[in-house]
Length: 378
Image 1: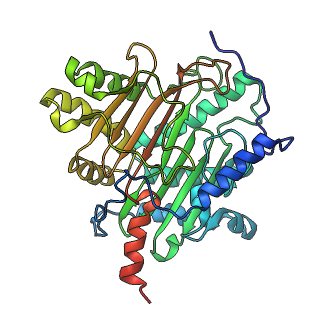
Image 2: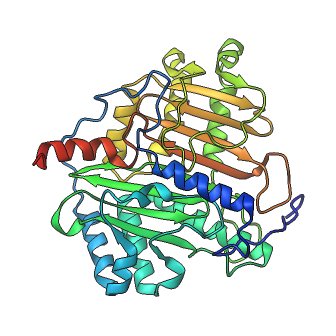
Image 3: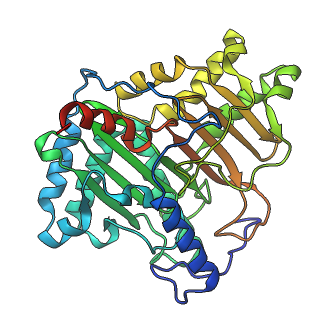
């Protein structure tokens, strides 16, 4: 790709050598994941009562049956490796990196075609058509980077780990996790309520110009509508939205930052004009709309019931960062520096996004707490 040189370094399932730097990174991750879960919050602490346990009337049987069908295909050994209790610590071990240590669940590359199809059916029934296609496109782009680097055996569309949590068979709380390079999705069902965070999605490159999936692209709308929202502001509004001139060095609320503390900053969406607000809702919809029909509508209503702040850093004509932050939602988008390719400044061919449910409901934790208090007090 023009302007992109391969960055040297092996990306293997296990590191060839456990260097001090790598050991330090692994130790930090383990310690961060072992911290008692609080959730993303402001300096004022956790705001209570934002996520009531309730019946939505939505049909979640298709998702449950898809999970059952997948589990029925697994051997006893695969079941032991690929499913976990609902409260298992591995929920919090997802990581975007291309190195494959500290993974859990079943790697799709090691599964036969029927089991892969069953996993994709779980995703398809849990996500909207847009959300499902976005995840699949990012898996395809992972093969693209493998083709460009000559490392298809390490970077490909099936190098993703899938885990099932809980017991979908008996109707209790359950969920699934997809974990791998640039695709980290956590999905929890408590009754007929669904939580689809944390979700980290990214791509490098964001457009496949060659290879098996040439023409595949990602995040074109997230980039364009985010830019349109900022450039559509007045000068005074832009001054309020800008929180920095330079992009941060990575997303604030990425992997192993389940307890990140960050106060609201930027421009409240409540101060936008009707036209500006329509653009803001379109942008919110790209992230909220990854969920299946019905759940996305409920989630949007939940978000619009709270004040959301829009924050910006960078140049709309070049590379930039933005976030949408409220008591019930945190979205971050950023152009990144090279990891697979040798550019040391942020460029538009590498994008990361993350979506969180602040105030303690990532992984559906707050809903699960209420469920246990109501139904399993003894």
